[in-house]
Amino acid sequence: MDRLATLKFALVLVRSTLSHLSRNLIPASVKRKSRKYEMAIHLQCPTDSACPTTYVLNNSYSTQTTNTTEAYTASFLLSFSTLQHSTTILHVQQVKKMQESYTSLTTLLQQKLTTSPHGRIIVGLAGPPGSGKSTIATHIAAMLNTLPPSCKADDDLANTCYASAVSIDGFHLTRRELAAMPNAVEAFARRGAPWTFDVDGVVEFVQALRMSCLQPASLRRTISAPSFDHALKDPVPDSLQIRAEAAVILLEHNYLLLDQGRWQEVSELLDVRVFIQVDELVAQERVARRHLLAGIEPTMEAAVARFRNNDAVNGRLIRQQTAEYDVELWSV
Image (tube, rainbow, N blue to C red; front, side, top):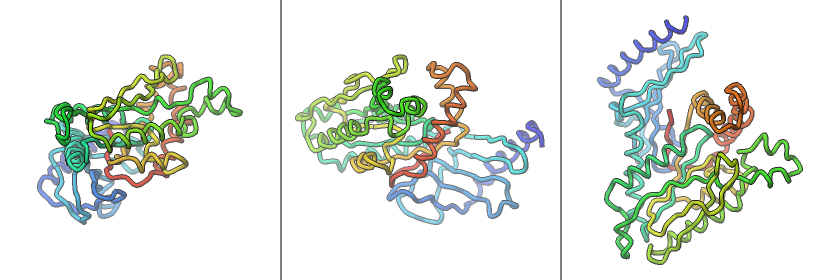
């Protein structure tokens, strides 16, 4: 089947599937690696011969483990790959795309905030490179900041509480520190691996945030963190500021939920843990383009090679050694 015929077949299949989903209750099993919340429901055909696709229904929200569940059929991601010899992978999504997932997560964070003694919670968004962590964290923060404040009114700052998205990329080891390593060549080639970050600094930073959750906003101090300058290719110390009135702090980084070494301590300090899944080919396109635009690699071919030799390796590690999480999202 050539690519054009595959595309035509896929579009017909999607149209019929949408119609089917709108009329029927489809057996669904909730993928449970979380403790309380789940936003990814996987719909499987009875057998491979009965249907040459695997469906992934996103944006459902459930607080119970059930074999079937009501789903937001108006907004979902339908991912499938044709069997036979085609390598085409198509991702078809209705107009709302991931908005239902964002809304569900925003609602969950508001609920969590109401149980916080002093109106501050720490949320960790983790996932493989190219899973859209920064984009999702920024979008969730923007959504929260359009809503009425939900933090407890225990002091004068309560009415100005807001959400803040914070990247942990600033805890990269500097190029000077990498060059001083015995395996300096490997360190530069594998920059972005867990051991090329200042994990002690990450733990100290998140511990400071955790301690601030025990204080009313009027007694908190501003907490600083480094950012990462892609032009300089190095961290910039104290360039991020988490102000006292921040109610929802959305941390995002590859390894926030890594179940390895001192990274394990980080996930234990979080109030809500979100794991973001992504198809590896989607991640490859995103990350390779990012390497190219940042000047890390001179050509797209070299950027793809860097992804496969480094970022994809890190991504597989993240998927294999992820700590327990509360919410799973799929990025497309």
